[in-house]
Image 1 (cartoon, rainbow, N blue to C red):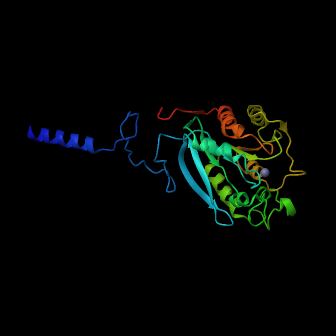
Image 2: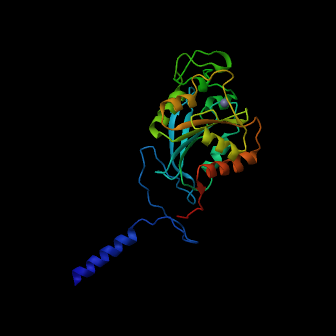
Length: 270
Ligand SMILES: [Zn+2]
């Protein structure tokens, strides 16, 4: 009998001492247990109600040493999607789409990674190219040619640390879709690996369906490389030079989630 009582007392003590998980406890301070790490670089957002971010990574560094950051949103295990913007530093507006997705409520239905600022040195200098003057979207090791001037393609394929960072990241994630946001050509290239999705996306984002041929032939582009080497498909989305803030922060995120079959859950909902 005494033994049983002692056992019960021990169990009760263990339950009381156990971790108190965040939950819909009204009006009381919320304690959080330490969640299991997904990877060595994983980090949970520790503050506030459940938000979109479930993991974050530094995937590499720019020429000038700035980190290139990726955030994982949504539900791991679902269809993997990657969205990238600011590959050209003088196209600064579309990253608001990605930061709005990142900073909002939890996303459900897809496993989404966003890289809002692919070219941080270019963004800091308001330059299309990176700190060595290379156009990252001509530097990929697929159909690379030696280009100069505005489309400077670098001394050799994948010569730039930013290119190698994103190549390594895409290899690890192996997404079913990559959506690459640019400006200012105002359209979606429907002459791509997955034209049906391109047309759907153009309608959803209210952008014209067009052909983006890089002013001639596309060489060494990220989407060209990805489409040739991966099962998934990569697509370029071009907004105009001055999209409204409302379009970038409210409309486009909502339109993207809808066309991808995703939704935003209420904080705390399961
Ligand atoms: Zn661009």
